[in-house]
Length: 371
Image (tube, rainbow, N blue to C red; front, top):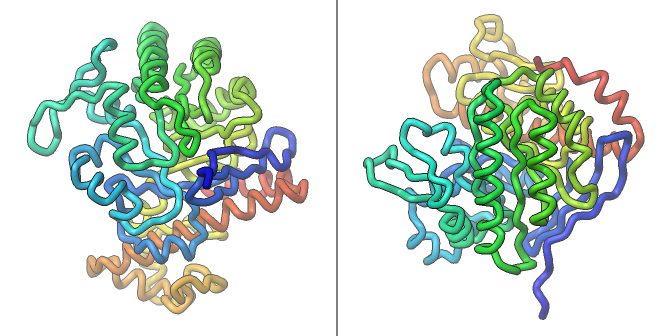
C-alpha cells in the first residue's frame, strides 16, 4: 500500500486571507492553524487527551531541546516522538535555529560547520549542522521538518541580516540534500530579512529556487512592534508560492494571528496560551482577563459559560483566583487548557468567516480586542 504524501490544498480566499487543508499520513490540518508548543514533548500542564478535545490537529516540538533530552537514542527506541508522548497526530519540529538566537551567548556560528553550542544543561559541546538538524528531526519522526537557519536578533544593521540570509540559504541547500525525497514528510524553508522588504524578497527568491514543500517567515516576533510585523508581511507574504503553506514562526497573540491571516499566513505557533496560563492570564471572547486581580475574588462566573471542555465552565473565577494566590498547580493547568481551547475556537471562527466571505467583518471586530 502506497504511503500517503504530504500535500496542501487552497480551498477558499477572501482578499489575502486563505482557507486551506494540509494532508499528512498522520492526519489533516485545517488552515489557518494554530500549533500548541510542546518543546520537550509536552504542552506544559496539559494532557494529550485534553489537547485532542480542543480540536488541536498538530503540535510543535523542538529539535535542539529534544536532542539534549531525552536524546536521539531514546526517541529511536520509540520510533519517534509520537509514541513517546502518546500523540498520534502530526508534529512539526523547529530546527534549532531559534536557539541560535535565544542562546546566542552559548553558541557560535560557522557557515561551513553549523551552530556550535555549549549545552545549557551540562556545558557539553554540541555541533548542530544543517545535516545534523535534519537527522535529529527524522529521529523525532517529524511530519513537517524545518531547515536550519540563522535567526538574527532585531537590528537595523542590514549587513548583519544580509549575512544571516547568506548563511541560511547555504544551510537550506544542505538541509534539502540531507532531507532527500521522502514524500510522506515535508521540508519547509525559512525566509529571513528582518523588517527590510528587499532582503525579505532576496531570501524568498533564494528559497523558491531551492524548492520546498512550505515556506516560513522567520526573524519576526523578536521585538518589533505589531505594526512593523504587519507591514513587512503585507509587503512580502504575496511573494511566497500560492500553492504551498505559509508559516509565521513564534506568533503570537490572537490579534497578531488575526492580522497575519489578513496578509496570507496559514500556520502559527506560540507558547503564549500556556505561558499566560501559568501567570493567571486568560484569553476569552471578552478579551484578556488577569485572574490574579482582586476583583475576581468573589466572582462566581466561569471564564466561559459556554465551554464544555473538561467541564471548565464549572470552575468560577473566584476559585481560579484562589488557586493562583495559593500557588496551586491546578490554576496553571486549568487556565492553560482554557487558553488553548480558546485559541482553537478562535482559529475555527477565522476559518468559518473566510469560508463564508465575512472575514473582513470578523477582522475589524477583533483586531484590537486582545492588545
